Amino acid sequence: MDWTRPVRAKRWLFLTHRWLGVLLCGFFAMWFVSGIVMMYVGYPQLTEAERTAHLPPLGSGTGLREPDAALAPAGLALVPLAELRLAVASGGRAVYLVRPEGAPPRSPATVIDAATGEVLRAVDAPRALASAAAWAGPGVAADYEGTLQEDAFTHSRGLDMHRPLHRVRLHDADGTVLYVSGTTGEVVRDAPRTERLWGYVGTWIHWLYPLRGNALQPYWSATVNTLAVAGTLAALAGTVVGLQRWRFRGRYRSGARTPYPTPAMRWHHALGLVFSAATIAWIFSGFMSMNPWKLFDSGAPPLNLAALQGGPLAVGPPQGPHPPAASLAALLTPTGGTTRELRWVRATGRTLVLAQPAQGAPEVLDAATAATTAIDAAALREAIARLVAAPLVRVDTLAHYDLYYYARAPHTMTGAPAKPLPVLRAVFADEHATWVHVDPLTGAVLGRLDGHRRASRWLFAMLHSWDWVPLLERRPLWDAVMLVLGLGGAALSATGMVIGWRRLRRKAGRA
Image (cartoon, rainbow, N blue to C red; front, side, top):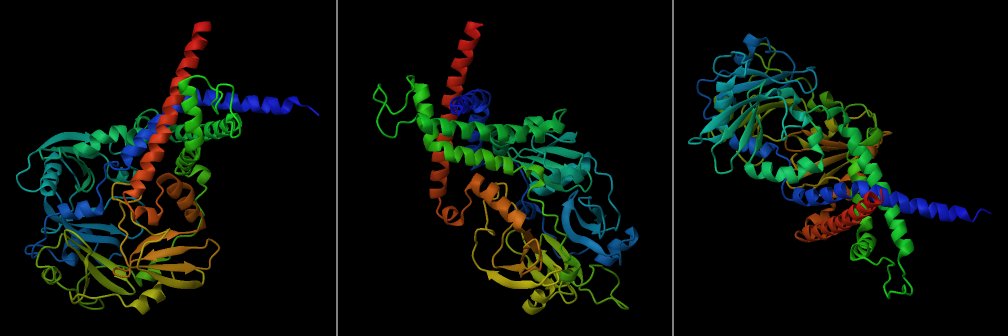
């Protein structure tokens, strides 16, 4: 038997931890500190609630064309539509934003002036300033700062359809910078001063965004993945070494349970044993956030949304085979002219209009009568059953959040999409074990989970954000747990940086 094998294996553990730690402890410290910042300040984004809150009211609709009259000059009347909404959203004017069915994914909407029917194509500086002025409200001055493809606060791929972006700086109390779509003229991102400043020590550095939007862009994903894998190996090796060197029974000659003589080494050893599990979980789950090797892509076919909608959305003259359509004035009356946006949708074979106020849930109106209406529960369940080509096991009504459907603060990675309650959860007996969440108020699909995505929920979201509902509902307990673990991890990394620096100095001195 070769008795040297265990010795060599132990030495390799030491060397792996030592040199990966020297290389990576700075990244560890940065990730822990920036993660603590991200608990309270997120990457700039324009949430749906912020967007609707800043849209000017549509008023009574006086002077605006009906949908069929506005869309006809552009050849979009009677065309099946994927999206149709009306809002004072571009250049301070009421516009229809239209996207035909079958349009390329993430393609910009066609913008039609609701007063004239003109298709608005070019987004120039005056139009961008007008959009910003409407967003900011009266009395707020603004400076136009030109166009850009991408900067530190616009790396999100969801903005690709809007590039180039116009940048406008407001003279408001928050020092807000607005980004206006170069294709539709809508405000698509707001970045208050607080989010910009904290972002540099939070999300921007945490996600290694210095590598984005420049010549290093092609290497960003590989760099993040490599650092995460190496960091996980370093932390695992350190945990094994730390357990081997700690005297759980008895003590070393120094009287301590750790053999290391210097304070930095002792603290690193002790902190490592206490915080190693959290450190490994955070680094590994950060790796999982990148969806490496497409682990969480199940290849499931798309949902049959047409079955849920019960026919295409289209607008046309209310005579002949087309159903009668309520006028804009009638659709705007139920909310007293305070509606910020009208959105036409299809659900269970009916055309509905969602009248969105500045805050809260939309008013659901019948598109033909403008009367407040509700989706028939039985019809909705029948339509839901056709979303997936597999037997529907059951439809549950969730009145409370649970492990798979829950809300986070808007500034967090998963907090921006609204998570209304109650919600319907449809469970299907397909090979992908599909769950679909549907809003019973609007008939909209709010999300889809299969076995792969539920695994992602545990391996990424749960391990990285500790978004366990009983803990989230007991803040500041969640904050206390996260702060203790985050600060402990930062201290562990800081002691590792001290140890690494001293070792490198010794190596340099001997050279």
